[in-house]
Length: 299
Image (cartoon, rainbow, N blue to C red):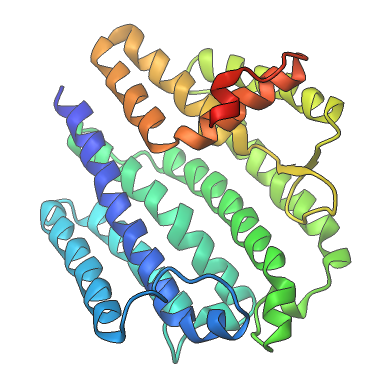
């Protein structure tokens, strides 16, 4: 029960970090987004309210830090995520405009350090020694996936950034030069993922096999599966369905077989990602040739 509640608390701590990331990114990008006519979440607020929201997000992060004062390693990882995104967004550092430094900072802040934080904190809470091998493979996997995420985002925004001379890694790199890079990054990610899954039992592997079958379904629907670089036709990002839906659900089911209370996590997962899950189910129906029912039509 204690571990279950602690996991929920860690999720809240990461959510607090995500709030800071969203606000600091919008706050520092505001003038660029206005120039490129791109939507910005802070645009509707006056300058004083923008600063107040940013301050509140910082104080929320500080509040969570107090709960990890005795767990120094986890606290370092938690603060490192904040530092990474601060360096990414805030001038005069603003790694976002410094090529590969921006890519590394975003991948570290969004995936690497949060993954380290959760793993380290759970080990501390369970009174087990830090497993360097486990942390290493989690680090390789999360960092590689983080690289794919930020590179996808930057190349997706490439034309907007070029239009206002906003320099990023993607604006300095032509898409055609990324083919080998995206294959290497994804290959490393999958190898690390398999190493992680080898320790988690059979259900996540079954979910992975199901995902492989889904890839053929996407091909049937003429939806291209991309690694990083988007396509002019319909596309979906490789492994996104597995990471967002199939893997979490398989892990929750596996945990609930021993601890039924863990099924509560399934409720939280559905609550946090309703549109993602609904879209996934809708796509599965299309793959099977089942027409949309009124539930989907009304959604």
